[in-house]
Image (cartoon, rainbow, N blue to C red; front, side, top):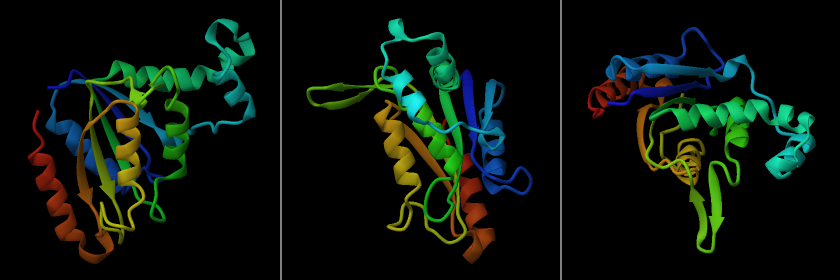
Length: 193
């Protein structure tokens, strides 16, 4: 049973969002635990030239301005480090992840902090965590050739060391909403603590 869950909401809708409903149900499944909520609808800064420069400056050499530029990224990384499990609400927008979720990814994928490079390739530094992705789509089948969201997020999570990933999919909602939701709810009930 996870002690600390980091919930990440990426839906542009606060009301009527399938992914927010699914993440509610997933968290309820795991019962009493400490929850940190990161709602990306509240805003996520985009990386820019100043951020990249600050990020690649050795920590001991950073100016106070550079530390301030990286402060939000540092907070997001710390939220992942502090949790046992991530529950990520992932709506598929135009075959991919929402822009806010991509911005979050850019802020948390940091060389030397969440991953490193070795002679054999990248190594994730956030091992021992679990993730549950709650995906919703109107027409795209999760995991299909047209789904550039779920596989991307799985890859990113593995890249930073999180390889135990469950996917709960309410996909193709515009084709069979009732059946899709029924399947997602069944998947949640089968999640192992």
